[in-house]
Length: 105
Image (cartoon, rainbow, N blue to C red):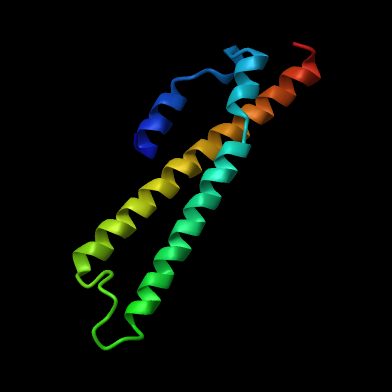
């Protein structure tokens, strides 16, 4: 699923009509934090592979062709965009949850 698909679906949702339980479920940020940490560790590992390629005349064999790097960077960009949209939804849900709690709903 792409970030634009997630946003299009979320735009159809009326946050005020969601129950407190539904909002709390959407507001959970722990899983997103873990997933972003995993993505960061993966990117760091890739950076080490690229750095290793530059240290040897023959290279380590990683990312020898521009198409390898392009596909990888597009995939990383898509993953980050999806996570960012999920963070936006979680933030909005947490805010709505607080609003409902303040109103006593």
